[in-house]
Amino acid sequence: MLRRLALASAIAFSGLLAAPVIAQDASAPAASVQQTPVQVVQEITSKLDTAIAGQRDKLKNDKEKLIGVIDGVFLPHFDIDYASILVLGQHAREATPEQRSHFAKAFYNSITHRYAEGLLNYTRGRVKVLPFGGDLNDKRSVVRTQVAMDDGKLVSVDYAFRKSSSGEWKAYDVIIEGISYVTNYRNQVDAEIKKDGIDKLINTLETQGAKALDTLEKDGKASQ
Image (tube, rainbow, N blue to C red; front, side, top):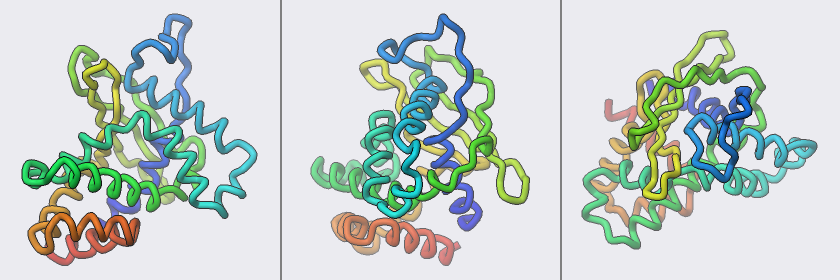
């Protein structure tokens, strides 16, 4: 299951970063007005199209520059602090503010480094954004999509959004075929912290980055 999650994740994360734009009518709010979750995805698409246009090969050979593009476009729409608290689970209450901050940055950086190349390998049309049926009066919402895999099968990928205190919608989780990315890593992070402590985990994420996530998934699979 973790193998399938990892495979779909590479496309799913690039799908959030490069999902097809859905036509809007003239009454759709401008970027300066509070956006719906779907409109957030649309804005990300537009900015990324501009950011990578004409320099795909260059970005492929310069991963740090690619990461910079992703950070500049995606990070403003991702609730990294909330997502990291969910991943830490019960350990978030035990951690100091400084530890939570360091973990959030290290975990986010690990994920972006792991899936950055997925953006360059993305083929337009693989991700279909489904009609939105949520209630924007709620504090949480979901953008539902379908991702076409290499074998032609469709995988359901949902992006969970949370409304901030300022009224902005920000993504914090990816749910692939019912499997929450936050929950999946929370179980593995929990085991790692109980084993070696949160400071050791943070150091591992900071020094090993994407390789640390691979280790977490392998360990999680072995324990099943």
